[in-house]
Image 1 (cartoon, rainbow, N blue to C red):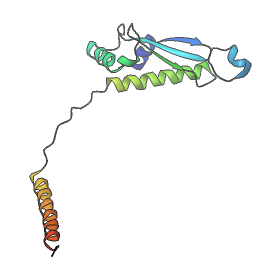
Image 2 (cartoon, rainbow, N blue to C red):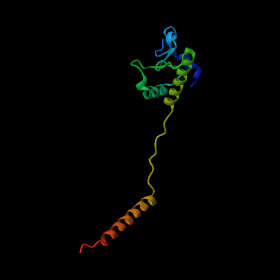
Image 3 (cartoon, rainbow, N blue to C red):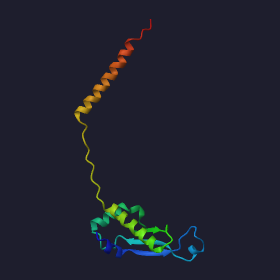
Image 4 (tube, one colour):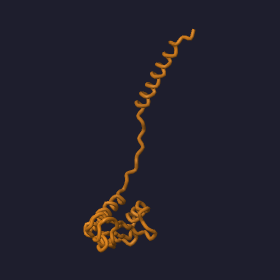
Amino acid sequence: MDNESLKKELTYRTSRSGGAGGQHVNKVESKVTLIWDIQTSQVLTEDERTRVSHKLANRLNGEGVLQMEASSERSQVKNKEIVTERFLNLLRQALKIEKKRVATKVPKSQILDRLDRKKKQSQKKQNRRKNINFD
């Protein structure tokens, strides 16, 4: 996956950021929204596109478009860098193929040890029961 060609597919939209900030916040569009259409992406293969769509299904809107926002900084440029980095990390995680878990068998020695401990505990309790006299 080539980051530079992927970044060319991204669209950014700016808007006014909410929260405290005085007069400055009312005139500067520092909030950045990243928009990426998975279906029209030329960087991903068909298999990768399917995997990403499946893993990020809860983050996509009705048209299959991913939107991410950043408004933590006062600078539009910094917010753009932050949202782009978050997007690349998210995409890396979505493209990662998880290894299938192989079930392991419990060793026979462990099973025998457990049964032996159970027998000893049972024997202990049996011995306690025999010592009680109700005469």
